[in-house]
Length: 445
Figure 1 (cartoon, rainbow, N blue to C red):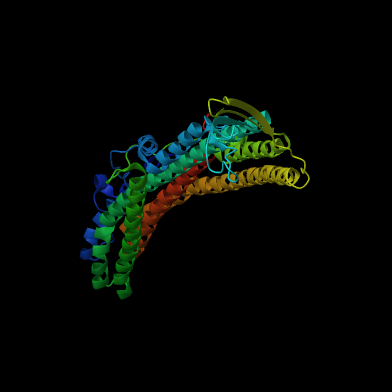
Figure 2 (spheres, helix red, strand yellow):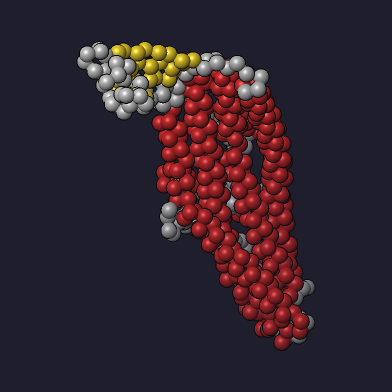
């Protein structure tokens, strides 16, 4: 987006063209007061406003890269993915074996009560027991763990996208706030000679006494605007510091010239992290359904133990197995399966709702962007050139003695406002362009 309004098509010649003798101050009618000669000279230097200087040293791309590398929020979300990946290694594994030991058949009554080894059935036992869940349960647990990784990865992608949006908008705000502040400072310094000359016009009788207050009000309005921009600059700088860690960030380089292609953005909606997280949530919900269904499959456990008895009787080895019996599935497993299946349907419906919301939000954002672009182009190509032309005409009228200084002051202030408004509209357009591009552009493009 070109901000050099000096090359705007259709711009009329500079007001300096109205000054004869190679830019010398225009001469009023011979009866005009001598006190306005300085004002006439000031009018001739209001030919054009130059482009404001830009600060250094952080470019747009550098700000995005620095935020992704240093923002603690993004490092935390990346650790969430690492945690889910590490936890998945244990999913679907057999439970730890259990060590079992005890004393069997110890008499507690009769003549051998409490005496270990007197009864041939008494023995010290030690053994191992291993639970073996069904294969369906273990497969479902692995599917849940894999879905958890997808959910964490999608959440990390959302966090990174939100960070890029925040950094990009903060950079744009800082960039254009600096340009607007420079433009206001230039306007204030350029209009100062005209404002200072206003009392002379009143003293000479060519302007009304109330005209002396006009510069005061105009200067105060511009100073109010400058105060708000200083606050905006501080806010944008603080936002950049939050994400990049740079304690004194400054935006340098040109604003990003991001082309918005509505068709490409609409095609890429399905690949956005916002929908990927819902897709991952759907996978996890399906895995939860499979896990609930695995409850209808029996789980096994196996045990082996060794019993030590008195040597005169001999030791014993025991081997056994147990199996769960899901005999009451209608009261236990089926309600859980129904609940998990309903959750899976809910997730799919919510994902569809989010997809529709994204499409509607994109359409609305593109419509607003088109309106802002039209406003900026109109301001650059129509309003600002018209304000310049009006200033040219009033300069010529002032040189011919047909208008007073108050009228000239009014039109040049209007031209300054038109320039500042054009810059405001360009900033709003750049902000919306960055926001839409970083929000809706898929990462594979």
